[in-house]
Amino acid sequence: SHFSKFQTGNLDHLSKPDIREQLIKFHSTYYSSNLMSLCIYSNQSIENLEALAVENFEDIEDKQVELEDRSEPHPFPPERLGKMFKVVPAKDIRRLDIKWFVPS
Image (tube, rainbow, N blue to C red; front, side):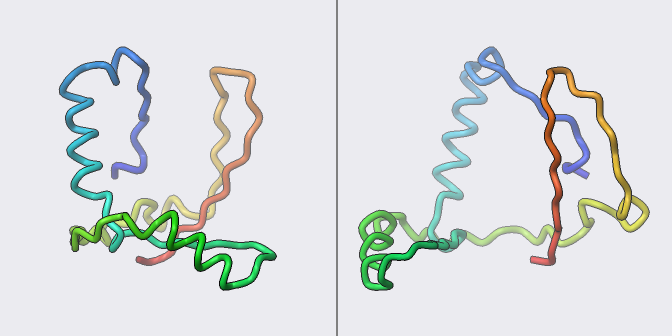
């Protein structure tokens, strides 16, 4: 599964022309309003929040992008659920990530 692969990158990787072009192509293909959701949490009035949302997001094009079905295989098969993995970090960083995967 692509969720279980180690991924890394640095300026050398990202400065290669083909990588940059692939990122630009990905953005131009998938940066579409029909793939996005927006949640705004504030103590402002709903009218103010709506105006802010329209002002900042109305120009995002709806390209009617359809995503391929990625429902199978699940990123974490049943035999990998309910387990804790302890990792020794390369840097002195202390972090706990908890993730819940829900169906699409």
